[in-house]
Image (cartoon, rainbow, N blue to C red; front, side, top):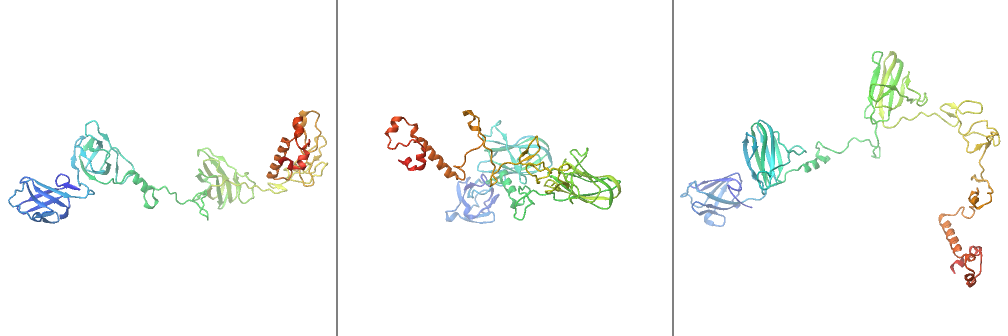
Length: 482
């Protein structure tokens, strides 16, 4: 892109006696220099297409072939060069700010972003404002971000480097409050730089090892890599004596049960307690994992062992309530599974208690030998009933395959009792598949539509066959297709 030295980019110093031009703020090759004119003398002193007006360049110094010794060092020199559009302008603003107020507007045309470098000893607040026409009253604050943060800002309050996206044609700083002085350097960039969305995308990428990472690590998995709810990563431990009776205390949020192991040499009573506020404690029933104590009948213990207690409150503790001697030690492990009842039962016993028989206390047995039409000697869970008057047991009526039968009951006279019959004839459809049953229903519908006894007499005489009953259609279904 053709640019003018001293106006679009960089600057130059003309030395007519030495026939040289020294460039600054830009790095050039001989191929990039297009045309150099002494505007004061209206004379071309360099032309890339003229053999008599060429030159050579070393570093940032161009030596001219044209004789310029008669010219003056103060002559106005116009130099056009070809610089790729990807080149940035080094500095758009550089200065020290010592007072409140708005600064000179900067034209952001052809730039995608600006980089602000703020330094100095100061306190206060500065806005970065933008406008499309540069007229007072049309300026609005712009959002900017630092080089190492994900958040956007609208007020500059400290030193550092900041990136502003060129959303408007003109940009300026506006100091709202200031103590001390601020050194401000603004550089125009042709690239968009990194936006907040770009940084957020990088932060969400696990491979970049940035601070923000949504990947959840160290999840509990089984041997097939399937996730499952895990128990606590570590166990709690403690000890209790006569002087210090609280063995341990823990927060149970997120868990359903606590496995407590007691050990050591001690004498006394240990109580398992729960609380929602950590101040008022109540005894919580659990069970002995060794199976020596019935389920949910244990709130205290006097022996070592492993005990499982449900998380009844937010907090759980082991309390050496009656400390006689020694030191009781405990380890508590929070579990994600609920406490399983130690339900000791079998066919003859429930919880270690024998089933109840006639005239004895105990629990109701599951099953038993009860002779029909006799007073039971045990108490099974009957599927049936017994006579209230005689007290004898009754069994349900079944056929030889064990299927339930209902006794046939003759309904009372009258159409209103037609559906009170206890027996339903299922001999025609029993054992049929759904398809066979649907075919049977379809045949009956066809029979009903051909039922001649329901037709008018004249139409009946006009038919080729005079069967009057549906039995003929059942015995010969081909009639339906005629």
